Amino acid sequence: MNNDKLYNLRHSLAHLLAAAVLDIWPETKISIGPVIENGFYYDFDFQSAEKRGQISDNDLPKIEKKMRDLAKTWNKFERREISLEEAKKLFNGNQYKLELIDELGKSGETITTYKSGDFTDLCRGPHVESAKEIPLNAFKLDRLAGAYWRGDEKNKMLTRIYGLAFESKKELEEYENMILEAKKRDHRKIGQELDLFTFSPLVGPGLPLWTPRGTILRDELNNFVWELRKSKGYQKVTIPHITKKDLYEISGHWAKFADDLFKIKTRENKEYALKPMNCPHHAQIFARQQHSYRDMPQRYAETTMVYRDEQSGELGGLTRVLSITQDDAHVFARHSQVKKEFFAIWDIIDTFYKTFNFTLRVRLSFHDPNNFDKYLGTKEIWQKAESALEEIAKEREAKGPKQGRGTNYFIAPGEAAMYGPKLDFLAKDSLGREHQVATVQLDMNMPERFDLTCINEKGEKERIVMIHCAIMGSIERFIAVLLEHTAGVLPVFLSPVQVIVLPIGEGHQKFAKEVHEALKKADIRAEINLDNESLNKKIRNFRLQKIPYAIVIGDKEVESKMLTIETRSGGLLLASLYEGRGSREPQDRGTVPIKLSISTADFIEKLKDEIRNKK
Image (cartoon, rainbow, N blue to C red):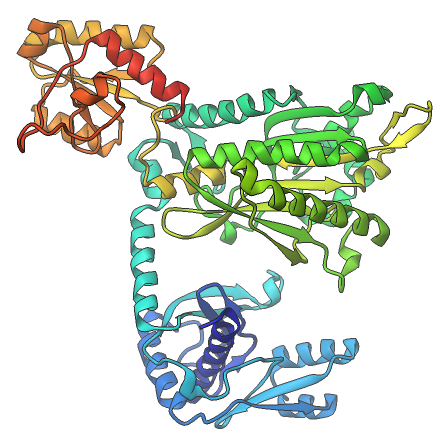
């Protein structure tokens, strides 16, 4: 089934859902029911005394059964074009449909309905030809949620019913199995098990507190990004967390994002805001002096928190927070330097995500030509910026096979930032889910607003451009994605604890402490467990904590001064690893792997190699 066919099937199921709900509870008011990834939803205003605010998951099987019964009677989806007056008469009493009809009337768009059986809905289409095309064992109502009408918290809260829909029963079952696995890998669960972060009701929702172990993970990720940026000529800068209102008025953020800002009034009644982004501040660092073309480009990098006033109902774990840590950078460049700078950033992104075995594709996020009022700048500036980005993507794609860096990109109108088009990198994780991660934006508007220039070869002022880039996007969200992608099994260079030393008994503690000290002196993140517990319990706990290696110290190790290394996967490091062949496969000695020991110095060298090469 191609994507268009699957879209039509899911759209048709949304109508079937609305019809089933109306058949069971006729007083219900229906609103909208779009197609979404993996399925569909429909929003309802339940009017009956029986169901007002009381519908639950227990009702979903009944609705599903009604959908299947109705589907057998729907022979076709009949499209009709109707007048504004007909539409208002048809949906009289339903304020949600009437609001949509008024908007269609003002826009001059043709008003269409689709009728199946006794059910008619306001709809642009398209649908399947007949409900007989719908595989009735390949959809399922999934869950309930609350949703404000039109996404506006000032409007009434409606009941949203989500459904899953696929081409076949097998695909539905595969998706459900993936969801079950995703629940096991939930970053909130893993974060608690590994003691990485916590939330406090006294601090507030959406404000994660990072433990010592979690802070190590954040710092190591940030250090990795900085290594890559430093090699490309970036310099670190630092800015404050608040700013005067004036800065965001000039940048345009105050007018566009006023509701998302945390505002502060001083005792002198001056208005400030917690910064929701860093670009206007970095622009002021560039503007501190007049730059020559010889100074260009200027590349500033800073990892810092920004703050956005999200609705409490939208906050969740690390994926949606109020304090967002951005590994942010801004390049101030001449137009002739844009392509080279984009390619350099693209190289950083490729290297970073390849390290964690993510598969990337690129979305060219352009403006919505039907809603230009929400953007800053002129259509001419936007056309120039978008053409430049598309040219960069095409050239990257052409060079990709030769450089071993393939480019899979597509254009998405309406996904641009308010001040410029961007490249959004979408990473596919080990469960097949796609996440937006890195972003690179080409901004020709902010240099205009802040009058940013350099002096060119002719001694004239030349307008520059800004490139915004964040490799992880936000550290919080990236860590959530990474924990679920790896199920918490982090590479050694990121693991907050890289090795744990496990003496079997009290008589083995002296040598265990010596090994522990040697590891710490070598800058290995090591811990030692001196608790009076059985060895089996100690090993079980180390594997639950997903620590890469454990050194077990018993009589043999004390006597030989050699180490036996357990891995978190349940095995032992074997001979071939130490002989320099790099294999983790057991050597063929009959059917029993040979347990071999390694010196403390050799094990430290092995660890340093893994850390250095980010294996």
